[in-house]
Length: 358
Image (cartoon, rainbow, N blue to C red; front, side, top):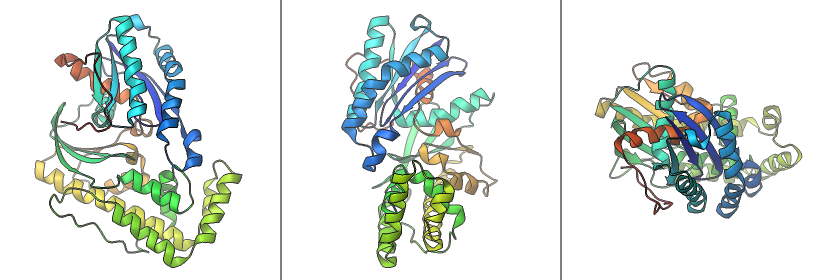
């Protein structure tokens, strides 16, 4: 029993094959970084066009890597939302066409649920099951959600961002400072070279649901710090560095980043991590979580991973770096419980930019 997963929710075209034993047989990801980096962010129309170019060769490569033919597949799973609707539409349309041509069942997967299954997949590959109830933090450029996961397929939303997602805050601050896109990983690598207490940022205070997140105030605080310190020349230098070197090395970034800015970056990262973990730990205690799943692009953040080591009383589960960012392995893995429950989609399946995880 093998399921082909297809993911195209944003700017990465991905396909993967997973078997019933939760063995990852192949995972192929085509990045659009080169297309969007010069614009400082993802351009939806360009993303859709790149998906059109990439989806057929990516799926073919995933099948080849898995030594699998279409005749060997049991079903095809596809991300139906949330995400950029044009990007989603490419994956959904192609998956429906394959299912129609090959008489295969179609399974629709929520992108956020897929990120949770990235951890479940890798734990099972190690011969372990994720203990439930679990608390799941899905943090990326488009999402920052907290869920109670009482069992596979059973989710209760506890909190979410009211404005910017955590990953979006990273990328916007990096762009403001002249580090380009995507700049979140650069800030993460620079943070250890600064003083995390060097700049005092205020933690967000939420009215209503205290488990909700907000990062727009922190992003504005960074902007005010930049304006007060008059670092326009420094920012311009880093932008020129990007033009001359693609991408710049860490040594070059350090040479172009004075200590005061390093301290601010370290303080920004400390504040984001504190915002995330403060709510995670409160939620975990409230629901009596046996494990804490941290997934999504922000799960790649080394500062976040290192900080969780301080909390030995909690069992934190992270995906590998390759399955933290968008991929299709997590989509195929999330499809197996749906297949067993007979949750199949019809050919009227639509791409949905906003799709809650029930």
